[in-house]
Amino acid sequence: MTLAPRAFLTGLAVLAAALALYPIVGTGYGVRAMLQLFMWIALAGSWNLISGLTGYVSFGHVAFFGAGAYAGAILIAKAGWPWLPAALAGGAAACVLALVIGYPCLRLKGPYFAIAMLGLNEVLRALTSYFEGLTGGGSGLSLPTLHATVPIYYAMALAAAGVTLLTYLIITSRFGLRLMTIREDEVAAEAMGIDTARHKLYAFLLSAAGPGVVGALAARDQGYIEPISVFPLATTITMIVMALFGGKGTVWGPVLGAIVLFVSQEIVWARFPYVHQLLFGAIIAAVVLLMPRGVLGLLQTKYRLPRTL
Amino acid sequence: MNVAVTPTMVGQVVISGILAGALYAMVALGLALIFGVMRVINIAHGPLLMLGAYTTYFLYAGLGLNPYLSVPVSMAVLFVIGALLQRTLVFRVVDAPELSSLLLTFGISIALVNLAQLAFTSDLRAVEYLTGSWGLGPFAFSKTRVLAFVFAAGVTTLAFLLLQRTRLGRAIRATSQSREVAMVCGVNVGRIHTITFGLASALAAAGGALIAVVVAVQPEMGQVWTFKSFLVIVLGGAGNYPGALLGGVLLGLVEQIASLFLTSQLSEVVAYVLLVVVLLVRPTGLLGGRQT
Image 1 (cartoon, one colour):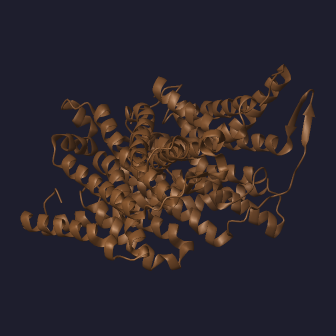
Image 2 (spheres, helix red, strand yellow):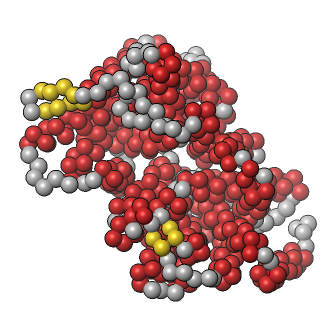
Image 3 (cartoon, helix red, strand yellow):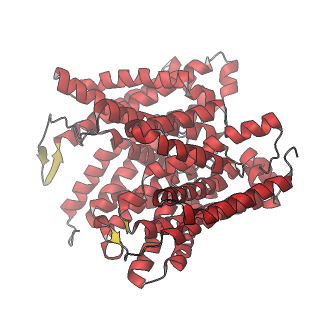
């Protein structure tokens, strides 16, 4: 290791302390922006858990975000739950959805999973519009007013940290090694006795939980949700771009990608909203063709950084 | 929501299903060809269909060209675009892991939709060429749907004749069976890949041209076709070209029958449930497909 682990951990602790104190000194805009950055870190990191580690591309991860948002919002608005347990319930709801979709699709090899995820988003949007009694349909669902930006800031920060820590734990575990074996050669993994279907499903469930929790938190934060606002294809595209750019299959790649792309989005691209998707499409194509392992993967190879970074 | 279902309604629905199914089959055949020959699922298939629809719209709005005469023009234009995409981008990921080709074509897909929004705006465009319906006994058929069926059946037949009866078709089938053996037999595999991608895009374009007369033309009209085409392939068996025909008709029938009982909002849900059920019960498709 060229990087002293102790220095690295100290740096992380200082960063965590600074982020914990930030709401005291930060402006309203600053806290909101950081809250969104945490959300993107959690989302990109979660996408990385299934797609970066097992190589199974999820084109519909926003479905879990939306499912969590609706589960949380319904529990808060109709059952009067406090927002914290509602957020956890959002994560659980997303996991149940992942089980229903993942079980038939992940038993198979090939692109079945990718396409099943591609359609899932539209289906959920149609369903939430249809079941108006529960979801408010197209007119949306309003939550009781609550000023909780700072507590939600901490909850989002915990979600981002949780997903990153989970990724680290997985990558350094035998479970993670098995997942990466599936990514490199699924037939070989099977031949070595790995129950590939089960492992893929576990990874998928873990990758759904984060977006579910974050979705419920975002719903609470915004106070109002509707089918179009919580199931945008653009959210899936953004998390894919972030994870790919930073480096899929690494611990810090999604974090790096989320920071770089979120900041550039806030500063530069907000002025060019019409070419946003074009730019993202171009970044995806460029990363796939020119640096498939992302920025961090490139640095790992060049400077021999540890694989667990 | 219909309370009583009469035999006439059932007949009407079955015929409508077959009419719609031919279109699904033709578009899905394109996706099946690319998958069979290159093992690439082209996420940009639907957006290519959208470009075909725009070609027909602009030929109609600008030059007053009959939309049915523009079908071959749209196909030719998209053949070139598809071949160029293959030549410049997609060929780089043909041998790469699946993740690369899925992500690359996904990137192409969102870029194409955004380009269309920039170039053509998001306004809904309509090709108002033909309205009304033909009656036959108790049944009524929308003229545009019938013509779409006739053209789709014709184009699909031509595509199969090309695949079965020509040297080029034999080379495509050979490459799809085994790239190495085809190469050894003197097939220029790179060239076959380019032609296949062009052909597949042309099939999507034909679909786009035919539905331009039926539904509104707009940049995001295509994405759902990627999903439906894949569903058709799964129904018929991946890599099984005649299976795509069966799958297409089946999807058309299921959607139409479901429309008897459900609101149109839920028609997409029906297609999705169908996909999940087929993957659970018969993952190799109804006619059996090739393992990937």
